[in-house]
Image (cartoon, rainbow, N blue to C red):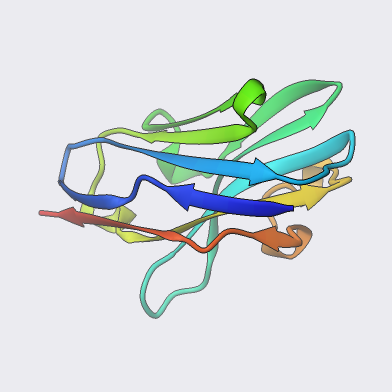
Length: 126
């Protein structure tokens, strides 16, 4: 599986960005595409994910609930992360990743994801 993340940039606080993650290659019938971020000097952390197992389920980290929305276009094999009401605390390098045969309890864990994109930088100015 190969992933290409894009859409990062510089935005003022309160603004919006939409990140895209284009996936190619074979996936299992039960998999998740997650968004993670890593700020300078901090560990990589979960942001949001969409998991397919029959239907689809979305997951969010608490601090982004109500501001970020994850969605997908299966025809384009692309997952989006719409980010609204951005704050300087959202500044980070954002990664998308794929986890195969993942259960619910593993969706938020970095270690569940075996395939990672290259990251796209989001900078929010105050």
